[in-house]
Length: 535
Image (cartoon, rainbow, N blue to C red):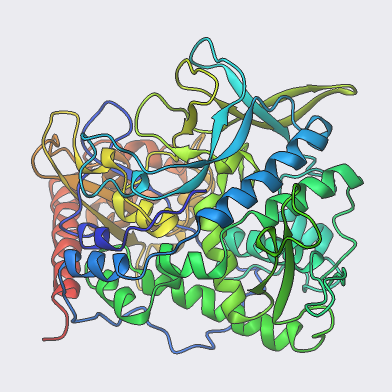
């Protein structure tokens, strides 16, 4: 289970954020923002956009932590039941899809390690995780592998194209691409899987909703998917654990404490949900209900055992349900083999700061040859019953918080033993730039082996104690192109078109370099002004 209660972390997520460096180097790291293609069918801005609003409430992190602890979720019995459901499905049908799966789902107790400080939230709460079911003799040993079955979605792995090409192909308009992008498409797939499990709340009898026959899977594989969906965190749990579902006051504090703005995410989610509701869901509520009822039943329960058998209501095809599903996807998805994916059961593995690997892609041997898939590998030797941990990747603390609901310890300490400050800065080619078309042409076609780049790019910047102080070369290279003009504009002539991106990796001129530095300074000052609020 990848969500952990960490309300008291978000004041660390802006200019007070501690650096997050998973590779053994200090300095700057960059991340690319998603851009819009002109061929997209994109929902209009239907909500009152929050993007430029900055909150003025600045309370202490401790106060928020205390408020969260005063209303804890007592979910021990629920987690134990869900672990039983997941393991029963793996025991009965796991060999149908996993190649292999040398682990089982377990309730991970809070840590008693004295070295864990008060901010090590992932270790302070009970949560689902994976433990080794067989000895692991060495690092880099495969614990689990799952094939993708990208063509028809007949396996367990979910990828965005399955929403537009398979499940919703007769429902969504051609070229649909919402503001939430691939995350939103995965969220729609997840909502459909929940709807397929709908039961009559009065009788408990199955009454599938959604596009109930897609994707088509063999019964054993569908049984695994059903167990996985049942074991996902409930809406109530996610409302406590994930920033997208926090209350407005807490979200306002996070907005005004970080350069990575949660209001941008909320706007995208709400606008997509409003469009989907008006265009699709309201037109067919029999297929797309606002809520669904799932029957959660322990494998070792009996018909008379109410403690191990209950009906759980979840929001579904509604703005509330869409936000819930987006939070689940943000906390559980992985970018593997060129696509963002949900990898059921592999995603129960919790994050470990050290001796852990990211989930990776590769070829998986099958009876019919080799198929593309994802691998979960151990970062160290394990005994039976020890927890299998993975790395959630090289993210900054604000990104960890917005994706997973916690900030790991590695994001608070640099390799040199100090702490550093992290922020996200965004730069773009100005709409009024007289050379804009030439620069966009370079970014789209002439960035060598890189994928085409959008005219707006975001970068995580790190400074302070423990950092080298050197700017990210990728950020500076992009800014040199953005600021290119005047006497240097000749480099945009067609004769240099295939070389100009390479030229930007070195200083172009004193004037251009000055403009780049001033661009970074202006962006930092603007970010600080936004954090100060309106007072």
